[in-house]
Length: 80
Image 1 (cartoon, rainbow, N blue to C red):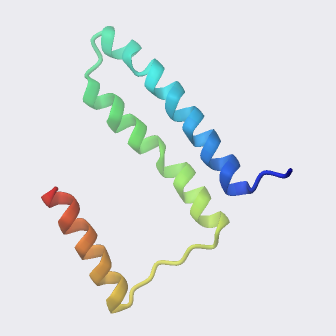
Image 2: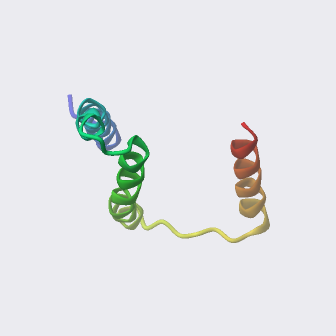
Image 3: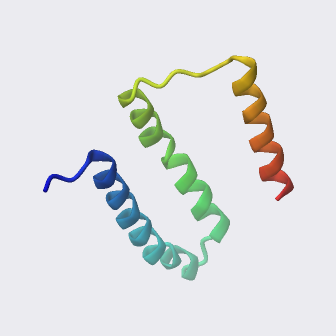
């Protein structure tokens, strides 16, 4: 049985999240602010996200429907 590419990527992502979750407390115990760990993680995710988007030839949608959905997602996310 051959694994589908999306499943391989999902499993790798889950593995890396587990590793990150296990090791993130080490700098926190040494006095590094917990918030900075999340900020650094978020910044380092920009490059893999750009690679993934390039790989699937993603294009930004600018029609009214896409903008409306983006606004609704943003508003409900911040309200939550």
